[in-house]
Length: 280
Image 1 (cartoon, rainbow, N blue to C red):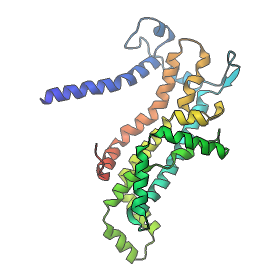
Image 2: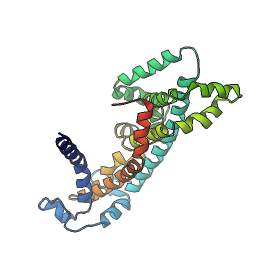
Image 3: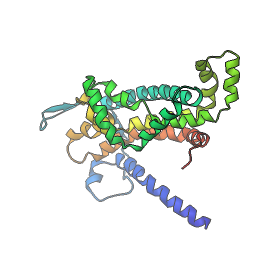
Image 4: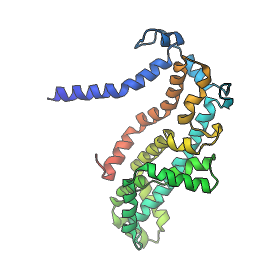
C-alpha cells in the first residue's frame, strides 16, 4: 500500500514540476530548436538568453506606434511594489491581530465576525469598488494604486490572531501589572513568539503581490507603471517570432526569487501553519 502511495505522490510531484522544468529548458534553447523538432533537453545550453532577457532595453513597436519599457523597468516596479505592500501588510496585520486577540473593546467579536464574512465574497466583487475608490482619489497610474488595495488582509489577520490566541493570557496580565504598555508587550513578547507565523505571512504576501495580474493591469495607465506579470509579454513583443526562449528566460528570472525564498523558508511556513491551528 505504501508503495502505491509513494508512487502516486511521485507522479503528482513530477506533474507539478514539469512546467518549471520546461520553462528552464526552453530558456536554455536556441531559436533554431524552437522551430524544429520538439526536444525535452536542450542540445546546447545557452545561458546568454538570461543576460539578453535581463538587459533587454525599451523598444519601439511601429505597428502599435508605441514605445515599451524594457524588462528591468517592469522588474524594478515589481520589486518596489512587493516590498512596500509586504511591509504595509505586516504592520497592519500585526496591529489588527493583536487588537482582536488581546484588547477588549465594544463589539470586538462582532466586528471580527463581519470581517471574516467578507472572505466569503469573491475577490472580483471588490475590484469594482476598489477601482472606483482609487479613481476618485486620483491615484490611477501611481504606486499607491498598486500598493494600497493589497495592504489590508482579513485572512492574514485571522491567521496571525489564531497564533496570538495560543499565547497564554497570563503573560499579558503579568506585563500589565508590571506597567508594560500594549505596544511594548506586542514587540517584546508576542512578535518573537509568533515569528514562524509572521514569516509565513511575509512570504505569502510577497508571493501574492509578485504574481498579481488583474489589478495591476487595471490601474497601471502607462507602460512605465506596469508590473512584470503584465509587462513580460510586452517587453519582448517587438523581438519578432520565435522569441519564446527569451520570454522563458525572463519568466525564469521572475520565478527564481520566490522559488529560492520558498526553499530556504519552507520550514517556517509549515511551522507557522501548524502553530496557528489552521489545518487543511
